[in-house]
Image (cartoon, rainbow, N blue to C red; front, side):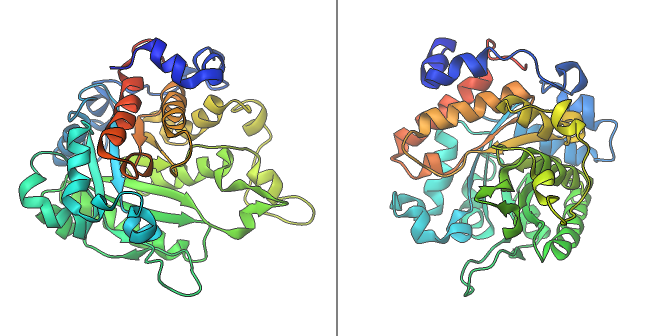
Amino acid sequence: MNTYSDIQSTLGNDAESLLGFSSPKIPKEKIHVPSDTHIDDVFSMSNRSSDVQNNLKRLFSHGRLSNTGYVSILPVDQGIEHSAGASFSKNIDYFDPEKIVTLAVEAGCSGVASTLGVLGMVSSKYASDIPFIVKINHNDFLRYPNSYDQTMFASVQQAADMGACAVGATIYFGSVDSKRQIQEVSAAFSKAHELGLATILWCYLRNNAFKIDGKDYHGSTDLTGQANHLGVTLGADIIKQKLPTVNGGYKALNEGNATFGKYDERMYTELSSDHPIDLCRYQVANCYMGRIGLINSGGASGDNDMHAAVKTAVINKRAGGSGLILGRKAFQKPLEEGIAILNAVQDVYLCNEVTVA
């Protein structure tokens, strides 16, 4: 297991800034900090049935992070979202559904998220061994020219029939098709709760207008925070969001004669700063002050994935998030290297010296 010193070493030059940060704009006392009693503390007063709560407990009580209040989820839906060849050429083992689930099991993940086809192919063998999260909609990525839309590939009933504990869905907020996606996902999440399944929303932004003067505001904390707020309104039990990298999306989109949404200057002066933990804390605040767990995504695989993964985990944890959902940095490597990265992320959440800021 990686110690606090190991985490410091992995962070390198980022260690002091991230581990020493102690003055967030939104105080820790204002948010619901993850704990081993979070499901009982928060959801017992909600409209979630006992079956939904039990499936959330099933997810939060599995793997190396069992009963810590945190989750580590392996997502492998990239075979559809990014194309199978592009996703699995680095390690062809993961064309095979069983290899995907095996990685999650051997790495001690809380659950595995994938497509109806992938999880259905091995559900009789593994659905009782590790919580399944069935992703029910996808961007098929074969239309020309490429467009960003999400189509329902599976039903909630199919997920329930294979023994899944949760369903996942994506909404591209800001896209031309977002209104239909919101309606479809709202109906699917209502059905999931009716059947006792938990719900996880891939809460993404998609609009070329969010790229202004060479700066990409798809990762802006003000815009992603509002996407989170829409997501929890739809009944998501967990929000998956990209780690914010910038701020000021609303302000940039309102320059000149343009008008977009509404914002308050205090969002930038009193509720956040340019520190990555503050940026992420604002995302947590928009998940009903942490009542709904925020899990940040691991992002694409690159040159120094161990550093990037641990850094993201530290930011998420210290901001008050509930864990990481990391895929490509793990499955695009040999098995042992993938397990090592997932374990290093989990060790951040297991390390008592890495505290919520």
